[in-house]
Amino acid sequence: MNTTEYESEIRKQMVEERRCPVCVIVQNKEFDILSQLQYDVTQDASLRKAIARERGFCDFHFRQFKRIANSETNALLLLALVVEHCSRDLPGHRNCRICEELVPYEERILTELVALFASDSFREFYWRCSGLCLLHMRNVQDQMALPDVNSWLNEVQRQQLQRDVPALLEMSTRSFFATTHSQRGSIACMVEKFVGRKSIGL
Image (cartoon, rainbow, N blue to C red; front, top):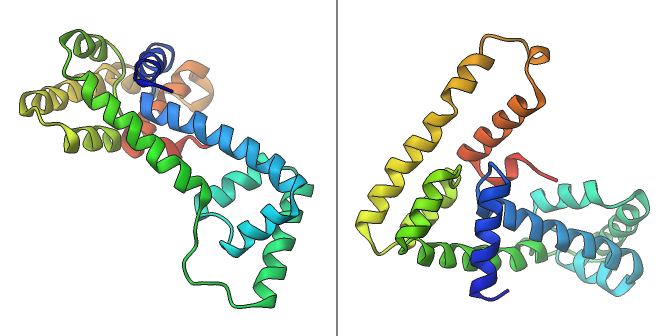
C-alpha cells in the first residue's frame, strides 16, 4: 500500500465507520493475518512447530486465533505446543509473529496520518468525522512537529466527544431493550474512543 492508498483508506474508513480509522485499518489487517495463519497452521506441520518454539502468540492474539480458527486447527496448534513444552524448556520470552507484523504496519499508518494533518483540507475533513481513539491521538501528537495542530487536535477531540452526549443522555434513561441497535453501536464506538481497538475484537 503506497502513500496514496494509505490516505485513501484512512479517508474511506473515516467516512464509512464511526470509529478510529487507525483502529479499523489495523483490525482489518489483523483479521487478514489471522485468517491466513489459521489456514497455514492447519496445512503446515513445520509452521506449527515454529510457532510452538515461539510459545504461540501474545495473550490477546492467542485468544483471537482461538476465535477465528476451527477446533481442528486449534487442536493441531495446541498439540504442537504441548509437544514442544514437554520435550524441552521453552524460552521465557514469547514472540508473537502477529504483533511483529502489525506493529510496523500500525506505525506506518500513524506516520502517514501525521503527514495528512499538515493539510488544511484534511483537518476540515477530520473535524466532520468521529476522529481518533485517545490512544492513537496521543501517538499522532507524539510524532507531530506542529504545536498548533496538537492544540487543534485536543479541541477537536473535545468537540467530537461532545457530539455523542445527547444520545448518551437519552440512552441513560432507558433500559437496554428500549435502545436501538444503532444506539448500542454508538456505545461500542465510544468505548473504543477511550481504549482503542481491542475493545471491539473480532
